[in-house]
Length: 172
Ligand code: G3D
Image (cartoon, rainbow, N blue to C red; front, side, top):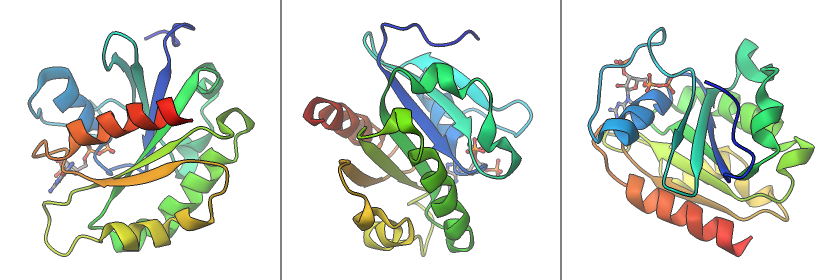
């Protein structure tokens, strides 16, 4: 895996471990869900979302939040997708901190944010409003943002989410 080709607009997908990023990537790659595990999963990966857009993925939070190769991707980043496990209330403060840290990067100034509220298929998952508040999204200024519920496992809400990402890119 090399770094991003400079002419392709980047969509960057980040989130805490176990948010569901590998599951999403596997679904995008094959149209169906494959088994994922932390070791064989796509800890970092890049794929072409369509002819014009590529998607780069990595874990944030904990020790992994300062990967030296980030800068290659951040330079061309047109939208940030942040994935959360909407059934895991306990890790929302950690997710909020990780998101804040990513958004603090100068190179991401003003770029739109799509929050994927994943695992909506699970009972008692958080509402979009709850997730917005937990992530402190209403406090964001000078940045378009949106929250989309989805299930990477079941393939629900994903098409809508990436359509919205394209719209946000156009608007910004
Ligand atoms: P990560 O790549 O962000 O670390 P993974 O996360 O894709 O490895 O997913 C972590 C776990 O959450 C996996 O379960 C995966 O199957 C599950 N998961 C991902 N998306 C969904 C979803 O939409 N709904 C539900 N119910 N589960 C999901 P395991 O058991 O393999 O750890």
